[in-house]
Image 1 (cartoon, rainbow, N blue to C red):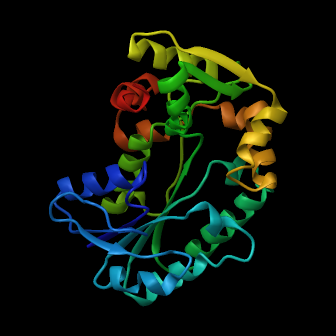
Image 2 (image 1 turned 180 degrees about the vertical axis):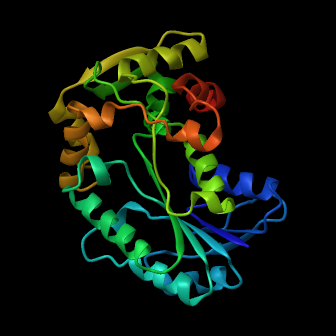
Length: 279
């Protein structure tokens, strides 16, 4: 049996589906009960309380560990989940980490993730690390403004990164959970091309078949919006990255193709599958 945390999210949901279709017994974990594919068991748990995960881990052979943002904060104890998994008999953990652990290791959230990575390496369990860059699904933040005003508002309109499709992340994670060859693997995941916010807007407009206007925000405007949802330090950190990605963050990683035997999906593919959100 394989346990998937964050099972209702952009990565967890397709991962749960892929594992179920592969014939695996799957336990999906999220904070609240939701509909799951046939045959998938659901357990409600809050990872900020690792003990609440105990029922989900009973009988599990592997764990996909996705940590929510608050668990990256200093003082949080996400590494306790790894100890709990080991004590419960789990033999393999695949951790959803971040590209930034390698490209910008001194940011607070990356320091916290590095500590979890280190705890996993030292746990005695089989492990793999999945380190995506920017997610294509971050464009869902524009969905409401596209639907109601035909507009995308974002800073640094002509600065791009190779955003990755969450479905590709899920497929790589599934391979790491199911195939012993990926034990000890560290996989940096990107899309196939650098794409800017302005180009993403054009892709959305093409899929809709109607114009979408791009409005470039100043950094201060973007920061004011972001700090309504995340701490100021995290907002500033994110803006630093998207304003001036470094060469490592612009690199097209070969790891999706190495693991899956095909090129990563372009942003346009993600838009086509999710266009209903923008209508």
